Image (cartoon, rainbow, N blue to C red; front, top):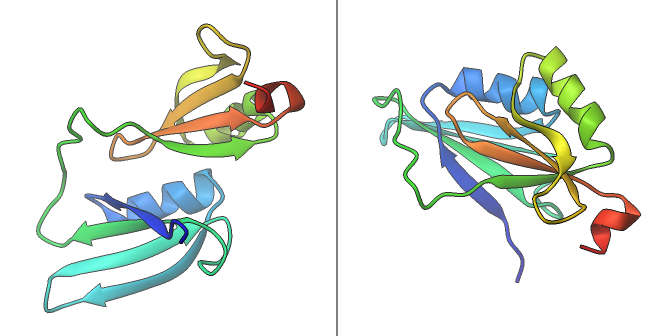
Length: 133
């Protein structure tokens, strides 16, 4: 068994695709409209679905926004340099909500960004020190 994808409901699919592809650098892997159900599914990720876990962005045509709830946490992405990643994300118009730095009570360097729907994405710096925490 392996994880295939995580699904997020998004209010504006084009805005979300722009964020995940242009700001975070993912690739649009596939996209399909389901007219009978009035929704569109778009899959994005850093590699093909055969060997990588990806994100499924679900856009219900009649819904512009969602309540995030308080049980959802975040998506985590490994980066080589969290400080540099934050600068690049900001330069591409992304919203950094927690600048890069050591996590509270530890030494792993993390940062958080927010997508257009308010979902949090944690950036985790993958250096030798972080791998030991």
